[in-house]
Length: 351
Image 1 (cartoon, helix red, strand yellow):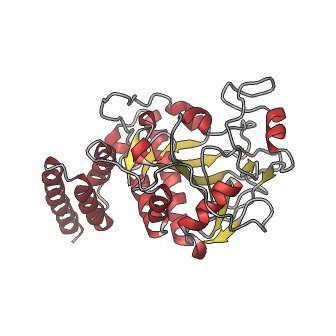
Image 2 (cartoon, rainbow, N blue to C red):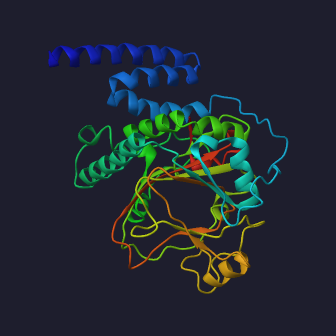
């Protein structure tokens, strides 16, 4: 019976891949992605998942991207003027209006219970599986042995795109690129769709969004990691971008596991980097952080598994460190960009 089931799954996957290929040849990428996604929810096919990563990237270059926003950033009303620090909402109040109000007036917004316990478990397992298969790859295993959990993504050569060559740096910082894990990315996008995140981001940005290969990650941050540097992502993402980051804890963190330290307000500009006392050329010194924070000193954030925080490239933050941390922290981080002004070096993935 198992043989028959495997044979049936293989036959269905083959037929589905053929249909998707016909759609791609007609430049109907979104339809091909939808077809493969729906089929894979039943088939869990390694071949389909690997193809989906590449189609989601290639799709970006075969669409015309326009925004419903004439100018950026928007200036939403402050719905949380009576809340000190970073505003908090529950998932039931998770709307583009509320998120925009929090991000553009306060620098970020916390969304409690963003993912269900089942979704958290699925994504935490995705992190563990991806790390394990990457370890096998580093030990010499072939891609056929590590798929679908680890298959390094290499973009189609185009002007502005570059091969990813610094995976060791990502791994040392507790990061696996989601695009390097076809099944991990598939699970992440499905969870985001079910949680209403993709629809919210589309409304927030004014157009269907694209993830960044270089900044969307499955994370396991060691509890004893070295002190991390303060930074604003806008310092190295470029000018004229429209972006939002959805960061979700997959374990409780902030007390005995690393969380984030954050300046609890929106900064009007990118603060100086690489000054005296900064850990690296792209990080911000403690003195500059204190000057930028002013009367709103940095806070250490506490999350339960499934909680999220949403912010953009102006936010000043760092991964927290402490001798009191005894557990690693699992999380997912997803940077969404508006495709109409996408920084191509970040390598787009349409969702």
